[in-house]
Amino acid sequence: MKINNSYKIIGGKAISGRIRLSGAKNFSIKALAASLLVRGESFFSNLPNNLDVQKTLEMLKSIGVQCDFNVEARECRVNTTNLKNILSDSSNTNMTTFLIASALLKYFDFISFPKMKGCNLGDRLTDFHVLAFNKFGISFYEEKDVYHIKKNKKMLGCEIELPYPSVGATETCLFLASISSGTSIIKNIAIEPEINALITLLIEMGVDVFYESDRSVRVIGDAVFNTISNGFIHGDYLEAATWAVLASITNGYIEVEGVIPELIGSFLGAYSMLGGEYKRISNDCIAFFKGKNFRKSVFLETGVFPMLRTDLQPFLAVMAALSNGTTTIIHETVYNNRLDYIEDFNKFGCDLVGFNECIGNKCRYSCNYLHSVVIKGVKNIRSVKEIKAKTVRSGMANLLLATVAKGETIISSIDIVERGYCSLFDKLKSIGVEIA
Image (cartoon, rainbow, N blue to C red; front, side, top):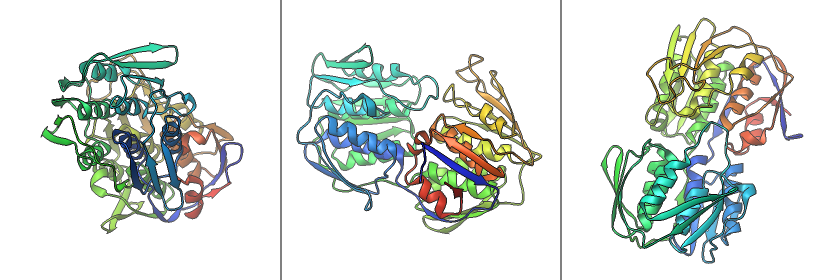
């Protein structure tokens, strides 16, 4: 059990077992927001019980949505018959607040909602969302810790090109386009798996969405929405990567069920270069373990999907840090504060040096932020008395290091990590991690 919002990890042994993935966090909370686009009851299956889902459900309840979540069955019914236009629940805000507000514009001319909270990864560009609102005829302004949006006229379809293929801004545009009159063309969109899953869900709900190119969609508005009869949440491939790394670094063997291999291709390539191996057991099951070969020099650069996802690089940094004899360079191009793990890793005895300069292709951050890191693999690491989780992924990366370090390490502020993982403590215990 979790004590004082901390896990105590005693590391140093191989970890083996079988785990079934929970539903994807990044899609589940957006699917719940989509239920607001239609009045009535919608149903979701394989919904994970992580903190972000819990927070989203609490936000929905605060605007009048009836939520019935059967945690054991991973099933949830939501009824959106009685909606309100003021989202006052600032304690549970997350990345879905813009989507919730966008959906409510279908019914209300004025929406008020608190500023969103999330992991401190650097600047989250609200400007992209503001651009979308303005393009669709919506005024946007801030007042202390609250955002206000207002319809000035009938919402009309438009053509919009995002300055950067932001996942959140793409989702906001999809919602706004589906409730506007006429046709919209959205260019330079993100194409992450959760975006494709959301587009599929919107089509099932009655929205006409067509890909015009690999990063452009046409959306025909004035949709007649259907309720969601079975919004299935696909397995979380970021969780799959977590167990893959754990198996490799502990010289263990973990079978992961519910994974779609095609969604983690860029990860699997980097995983193999850093000494991990895998084999497909069945259509949705992959076994991960440590391989015999690795490259002496590895260069990784994050980017918009299908390039290497920024969420994955802290885990790959763990593999790099523990690959004795390997030098790895990671260039982060998505967030300006994703390398917050450097200091923490070095406390374990790893050898990481960060740089403000671009090592690799020149990116939009130039030399203003620490966004490149050189990692020299070491043979052994030490336990740390206590280390505090800062974000979901870097906090999990610290936990992964703790499973290798002989001795006891306390990971505090573990609720931050649990935002992205369902039943994390129980899953770790089930595969043999010594944890209290």
